[in-house]
Amino acid sequence: MRAVVQRAKKASVRIEGETIASIDHGFLILVGACKNDNEDCVVRLARRCAGLRVFEDSEGKMNLSLREVRGSVLIVSQFTLCADTSRGRRPSFDNAMPPETAEKLYLQFCSEFADQGIEVKTGRFGAKMEIELVNDGPVTLVVEG
Image (cartoon, helix red, strand yellow):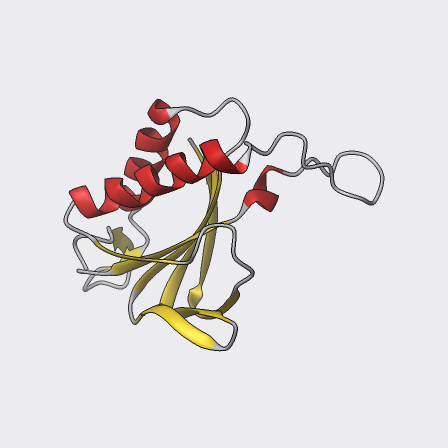
């Protein structure tokens, strides 16, 4: 699995003009399930993302995790993260997991955060979404699990 983790001052997701989820402080995570991913990958990736120490402590150092700052997470499925862009100009999505299986892993990824006591908001799997983000820093990381 692959994730793009963005530290956010606020983030929201809209579908057909309607805001379906928003957060004020925490992470916007775009997550994609690739063909060979499994439940172990999900657990590993969720723990790595939740444990990232990228929030500033009292000395201004990135030393605190999402839990420690009582942040929320907005998680959006993003199959295009599994694209192969190594040849030509058109990405290949052959490495993306089929939607039926990917949705199960996406939902498990979201549950892993909730199980750690982190407030979780989500996009809608497979929907065409508009995402609005105020990136804090900016801090953006690519994490693989």
